[in-house]
Amino acid sequence: MMIVHWVLGPKNSKTTGVGLYSEMLCDSLSSNAHEVCRYYFSGKVRSVRRYFDQILGIPLRLFCSVRRDDTVVLYQEDIAFMSWVAALRTNKVIVIVHHLPILVEHPNLIDKIKNIVIRANLLALRSGSKVVCPSENTAKLFKKTYRSSLPHVVPNAFKINCVERDSNDRVEARNLLAKNLRLSLNGKFLILAVGSEESRKNFDVLIKGLASASVAKRVFFLKLGRPIDLRNRSVNLQLSEGGGFDFAFVDEVTDDILRLAYSSADLFVTSSLLEGFGRTPIEAQSYGAPICASKIDIFDETMGNTYYPVESPERPESWAAAVERLESDSKLRFDLSMMGSENSRRYDISRVGLDFLGVISGLE
Image 1 (tube, one colour):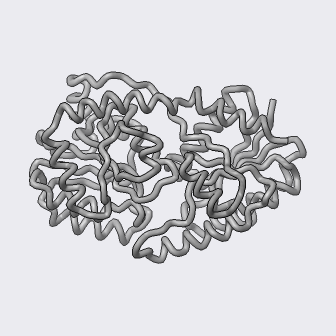
Image 2 (cartoon, rainbow, N blue to C red):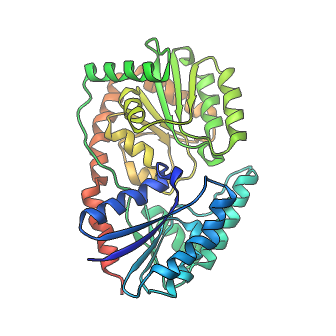
Image 3 (tube, one colour):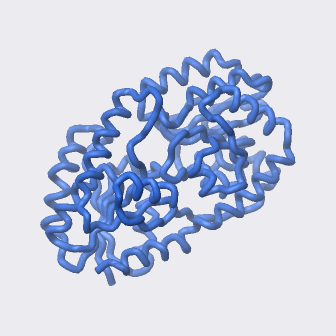
């Protein structure tokens, strides 16, 4: 039996893409009879208490708890500095790198601070630590940027339970979604997006595209998830209010609501310009939702030909054309749904968990 000390983020970030990546792998190790000690930061995201724990509290706990044969896993790149503390107790240290510094055309203050923190941590990463990335794309970029050996690749994991989309079940899910969120869908074409509203997510361009689409009046745009960047949320709301389509932004959602949304969506969109993996489109595929996404390298890697790619995703007219095409072509949506369901099976936890176990077992 191995003992693994896994440093995670604040508890209220467990359901983010980065948080779920580690939570799923922790569960997999535990189910295989290994002991996993989970360390969460106290306090909320961006609180003083959280940063105190990140800088001092958790490193001290690691120093006091870790033994020579134990393994330490750091859940993302912005705590890579802890690899030095962990190395004082054990040589078995893994750092998961989801994102490299964000490159956006007009970075705001949050983007700039995040880039500084990530760069500083990756430069401070102890050379003896093992690096794991969720995609080949991120791993190659890390190797090129930091001139390191190629990191191990372990993709995001999901509890996949694909079932063919039944029209009656879908109608029931849609009705329940409308009731729980108090939405008036009225037979509209339901476009779903899930995630934060950081600048790299490109939501403002997507919304401008929806507003200029000839089918805008037939669309209901549903955005689920906390914004993180409140200034971007303000912009996105203003654009939506003048967009000529129905919409709703819902911050706090349960797993049940998320499942209903995936099951109800006529189309799932992700307009992101940069991802380390892109969890939500694979999640949506597992529920049979057809995917329309930015044509970027990471989505080509994770979804191949099972999604509708939007060339030039930084241009609103590209999104308008894509939505018009998909709204009018039910056969294309059906084909994407079928291919997407099959694609999502590649990331079942039963497979991915064994991949990560192999990385840990290879540590010396």
